[in-house]
Length: 273
Ligand code: NDP
Image (tube, rainbow, N blue to C red; front, side, top):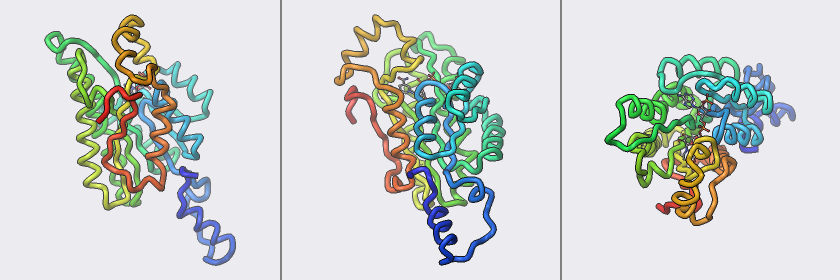
């Protein structure tokens, strides 16, 4: 299973056969061998699909969220995945949140930076608050979250960082100067960090979804969707959150170690790069 740590698995098998001596088990070996995955914004939309797919693939998953307690509790009850509330735009909140997750589940092996927001408006009407909120949540969060786990990943010589950007970070979008700037920044972050971590067993990749059928897109008026958005998508439909989730599971796998610094475009053919 891609979510299992193969080294520990082989070691345990050999211990059982007596080929190598048994040793005092670490806490992680004692309780399970699954890798730990943390998904920000993992309780709704694309993030919820990612959390569920990683769990199905054998990972121990933690899902964070910002403030929608009702959605988070429903998600937790339905999936059994623990949920944690903090604001990814705050460095200190991320530090405390990751510490709690690691105390509960163990060191984070896979970080999915998925949490994001939009505050769309034409640039000449955009306020500083709209700019800051979107930049800090969609781009600042990559620093705030990844910085908490990178030293542990370096020490353990294994890590997967998967960032969720957007097609609009690749091509730009009317009314989304803040969002496109942040999402383009996610791509630059990914490429640079991938270079820095490549020798250490850590991969860093970014996924650029096109229009996906979540509340974020359901908020777009149907008329705009039918007239302006769907005609741009060659497959002639919105993507489903599960179609992003399967890309995350692919990149998170232990045997995906040769894929790093890549931008995976999942957009129904809307924009080909
Ligand atoms: P949703 O609005 O459906 O869900 C967003 C999730 O992120 C929620 O769990 C929300 O928590 C959480 N979140 C938002 N802000 C913060 C914050 N400051 N701190 C912590 N958590 C936060 O979004 P989508 O599933 O549609 O989008 C997920 C990602 O995919 C985003 O990065 C988005 O930009 C990107 N994307 C989406 C596309 C789409 O078509 N939907 C297309 C391209 C990219 P809570 O529930 O508490 O509000």
